[in-house]
Length: 279
Image 1 (cartoon, helix red, strand yellow):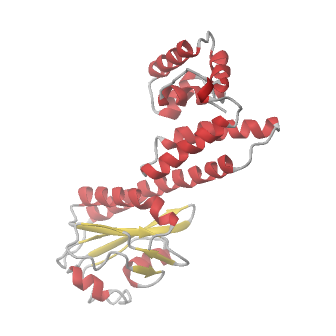
Image 2: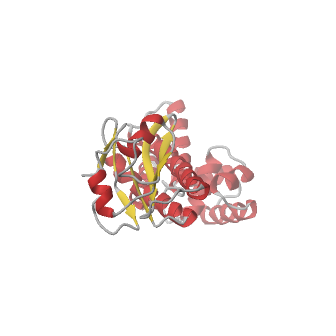
Image 3: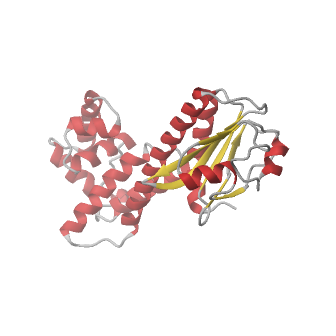
């Protein structure tokens, strides 16, 4: 059964495996994240013909993936079952899927192995540079996605803390709100994104404003822009954070100011807080 950490990263692992298959030309890809001490679980597969690999727990040091995890570097074999450079705890599952040539690449976040991605052929052929490069690139992209998730979880922990009257704490809360809204747009897991935006709503409600008492309705992007402005960001900085053009940011800001009846950026932030849209 998946734990919370695995579940939150499953969409990212799935996307990484799909990228690996497309870029490498390998017909089979599978992998997963940590699931306990010194072991990971193969939670996602693509191109497989059976369910033999799915759910398999791989211990650090065992098999091809376990070796890659233990040594924090990629490994490949031309004939998995006949290889003398790996142990063979998982031969039955590999044979059931009919795999021969297999490569494994560790997913390393802040010097810690968080999972392993595999690519495979059903023929005993030498794997060249293209599959390895594709697997490494997919692993790097997954590592970046996990970094984003880690930061999101840290910010969510701030959101769950009781609100304090200390002005310094309020600034931290407002920074967390802005960062959460920015990160939410980059998270692939819809459940995690929904939880992050719900946390944003709790932070905004903690300011004392009330959505029920306000007739103001801003679009999600208008709130995103205002939350960045509230943290002191310039239009150019807001554009960079949100992946928008500066002119687009100005348009969202003008629209939000009009809806809020504000004539300045600062007044728009104040009115948004009164309406319970920002903390």
